[in-house]
Image 1 (cartoon, helix red, strand yellow):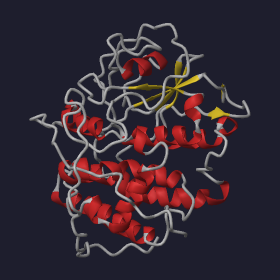
Image 2 (cartoon, helix red, strand yellow):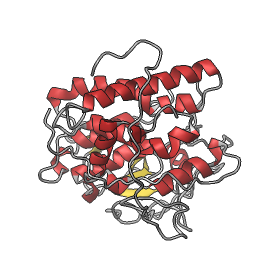
Image 3 (cartoon, rainbow, N blue to C red):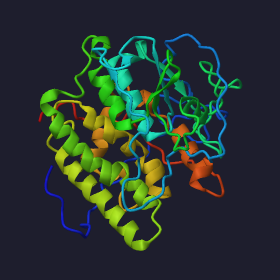
Image 4 (cartoon, one colour):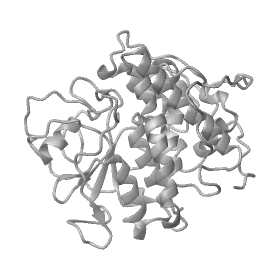
Length: 373
């Protein structure tokens, strides 16, 4: 990646607007806005691979639930490290050995941190051995909830908070997705978003589908972590630092970091298909969920409106390229994403109106299959 410029955003001419492309209209009862998306039904990307378990009686607590999507800004990180950091191991060196049909992934199609886990599972073929439960995209004062009338069919939980308090009755939050649940011990293994995907990529290797990509190759791990650390601080959490800023100075600093990094990434992607060249890796999985939400949410709602993603020639084509890969497009549901940000109580959007746009043509040819680097 080229050296980042000194403070002060350079003037940049936006790319010419493309001719508008008619949007694919979903059924009115399902989504409030037209979306070009591979998934508009709001159902899980794959069916649960484990049978229902008996229900439990969740522990009660007086603490107010929080989804963890809106933590306090204190000048540090936006997304906290996971509170539950158990490790699943393929050699059985921990209490959580890698086994098929033992673990359940709890996630939300609306949550960017969840989407990276969903993408990794799908790319690696782990949807055959790990079950999936999705929460409703709209979080209310009780936090993430399960859409089914009877709650989560596996546990009987009605809210994600029930799983946390079943694991630790004294736990006070935040109550985040994604998380891995152990069906055998009936408790949370991990909600450490950075480590969940790495566990899937390394410890579940014996269960990867034939021909699955090596998303975390040993020889490139230092490069992956170096690049994704920058992306985490300036882009993944940078949009939240901008959107939730309480002073002009903190907003200006956050926005400058967001667009300085996006400019550098655009330049980087002019010479290579993926962030590390021809190799699709964990780095791409960590960047994509923020990019796919940028024009629909962060540009307007979080005041990251210096440039749109679609104004970047290479970064926009790169995002469309990723969208066409297994796991990326099929876990992208802009209807659920916008419902979460505009209707969830934690974001404080007083009018609770979901905007109809933007119209995004994700299937426009990206022309990047010819690139080498």
